[in-house]
Image 1 (tube, helix red, strand yellow):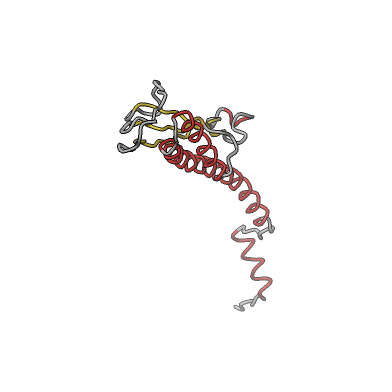
Image 2: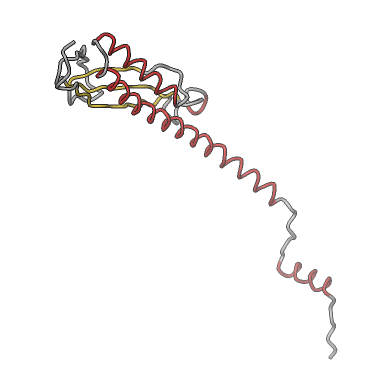
Length: 171
């Protein structure tokens, strides 16, 4: 009995016929690009939203601290409130946010979500809570299919415990 010897091309053809294996048509690159686009676009959107909220959170925290300091060093209460609002606006502009935030003075220890805003005074030893609040609008969240998937606005809050110096002259 004689054995037939097959060349490499004939052997590959026999293997393909026996196993049913097909050659790759070269579409892996197209599939990779398609899958990458489908996965990367939502990921990039999510990262942009997270960065925007984080930037606003940093700005609110800095704005509350600066507003409290600006009020405490003012010559009068009226000037102090104006300085506090200006300091908060500048803190937001430092982060690239042009919308002015809401600055509120509350009794000491009050949460920023509570009502009961007070008119602050520069009485020595007075204590207040300075709250800076801003609604962050997420891009395109109020349009199309995203309006049901994600909230359109996220509220960020900065809080600072303000204490007027006990040795300050009454204004």
